[in-house]
Length: 148
View 1 (spheres, rainbow, N blue to C red):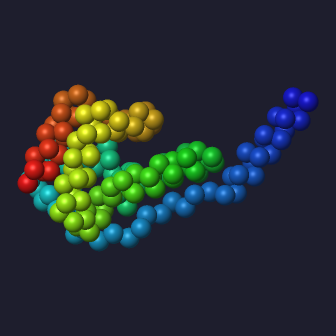
View 2 (view 1 turned 90 degrees about the horizontal axis):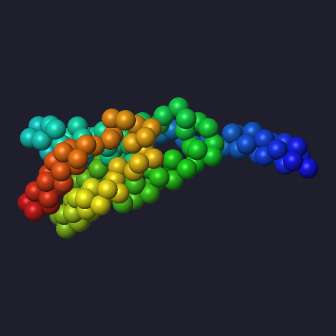
View 3 (view 1 turned 60 degrees about the horizontal axis):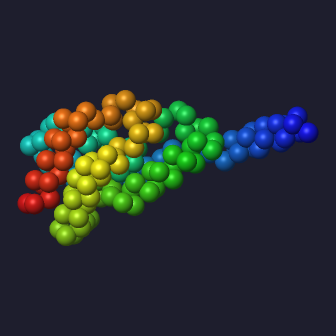
């Protein structure tokens, strides 16, 4: 009985490999991007945002090799879709001034509450892990940017 269950699971795992995620990003003009809109005024914040946020919250996702293994790829793809729905930094100029302020406040809040970057993400992407000082820098940055 255990052998049949194991074989059935193995077959399912093999079959689902034929349904990979697409490793592509929507086209986005650079001039719409949040980082581009900042210019060269905040280089440290730009780097931290790119490292910690852009894989899920932009159209510039770098898909790691392990996303080719299902169901892991499906799981990660759903996180990327969810992240882009919350805020997509690649489409920053499409947001109204009110939406931009709201997104900046949300960015500040999720950092304060340690909800982002997600631990499951930082574990697999060490550059995205922010120190307490870096988080505080970004919190201050988002607060200042949201009050402009």
